[in-house]
View 1 (cartoon, rainbow, N blue to C red):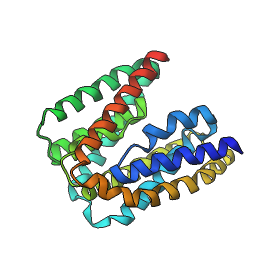
View 2 (cartoon, helix red, strand yellow):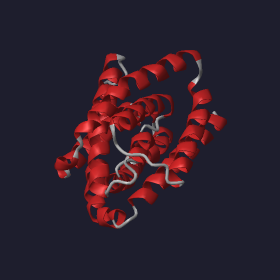
View 3 (cartoon, one colour):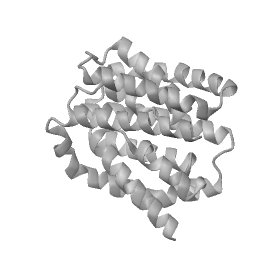
Length: 236
C-alpha cells in the first residue's frame, strides 16, 4: 500500500508540473516509479502520460497548430533510427551523449537561437523527439524548445497533441511486443488518481507559468532532462 501511495504522489506532482508547463511527466516520474516498482515502467507510465495529454488537449483544444503534423511525420523515422542504434549500442551508452545534445540545444536556445514552429523545425523536432524518447526517455525537450517562445496555452496544447500521437504509437508497440498484460493494466489504473489529481492541480499553476515564465520553465525542465540522461548513462 505504501508503494502505491508513493507512486500516486509522484505521478500527482509530475502531472501538475507537466500540466502547467506542457511536458515533464516522464522526466520527473519514470525514474522514481522504476525504483518503487518496475511494473510501473514503461507501460503504465506511457498510459498515464497518454491520459494526461488527452486531458490537456481537451482543456485547450483550439490552439493546436496545423503545422504540428510535420512533427508527427518526423516521429517515426526518429524512433526507427533509435531502434536501429539500440540494436547495436546498449541504451546506457546512448543516454549520456543524447543528454549532452539536449544541453547543447538548451544552451543555444538560452542564447536566443531563433526557432519558430515551421515545417522544417517541427520535422526536425519530431525526429529528435522520436529518437530521444526511444533512446533515453526524454522526448519532450526538442519540441518544447521549438515552442519555447510561444505563450503557455499554445505550448501546452501543441506538445500534448503530439504526445497523444506518440503515446498511442508507444502503447500499441508495447502491446504488440507483449509488454502490457493484466499486471500492467492494473498498475495503470492505480496511477489514474494521480494523473487526474495532478491535472486538476495544474489549473491554478498555469497562470503562474504564463506570466512570462514559459520560456524559463521550458529551459529548466529541458536542462534537467539532459542532466538526468547523462547521470543515468554514466551510472549505468
